[in-house]
Image (tube, rainbow, N blue to C red):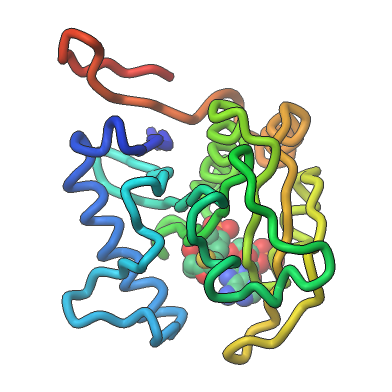
Length: 214
Ligand code: COA
C-alpha cells in the first residue's frame, strides 16, 4: 500500500534514510535518464541549492521504499523560477508570497510508472493538493516542460502561464501558477480513481512519541 509522506523541517529527522534514498533516485532519474547533466554530482546524490531546511518533500513510500516524490520551496525564499529562470514569468511577473510554494522534481521510479489505477503519479498529484490545503496555500508555481500543461488541465486544475514558453536545453519550458483548492483535489481524485486522502504526516508529539496522522 503506497502512501505519500509529508516531510518538513519538524519531522525530517524521522526520514533521514528515505530522504537519502530519494536524493539518489533523483540522480538516477534526472541525470541518468533525463540527461539533465548540469545536475550531475560525483557522489550520485542530486541535491541543489533549493534543497534547504525550508524545503518540503512529498515522498511516496511503499513498504518503506521510495517510489515517487516531489519537492516544494517557499516562493518567499530563493527558488528555481526566481533565481534561474525569471524570464519564464515575463508576462505576469514572478510570484513571491507566503501562500505560494514552488513545485519541482516530481518523479515516479521507472518500475512504478504507468501502472494500474490509482498509479503512483496520481497519488503524488493528489498529495500536492492535500499538502497545499494543509499549509493554507492559495497556489503553487512551477517551471515545467509544456507537455505537462494538457496533463494538469485534464485533472481539472486551474493552470495559468506566467510568461511565454521558451526552449531551454532543447526542452519547451514554461512558468505557470496552479490553484490549490478542494475542487482541484476532488477532480483529481475523480479523474485518477483515488478514493480518499493519501497524505500521511508522521512526527513526534509533545511527549516525544512518534505519532502518525492521516
Ligand atoms: N516528455 C514527454 N512526455 C512525457 C515525458 C517526457 N519526458 N515523461 C512522461 N511523459 C508522458 C508520457 O508520454 C505518458 O503519456 P501517455 O499517458 O499519453 O502515454 C505520460 O506522461 C505518463 O508517463 P509515464 O512515464 O508512463 O508514467 P507516470 O504517469 O506514472 O509518470 C512521470 C509520469 C513524469 C512522473 C514519470 O514519467 C517520471 O518520473 N519521469 C521522470 C521524471 C521527470 O521527468 N519529471 C518531470 C520533471 S521534474
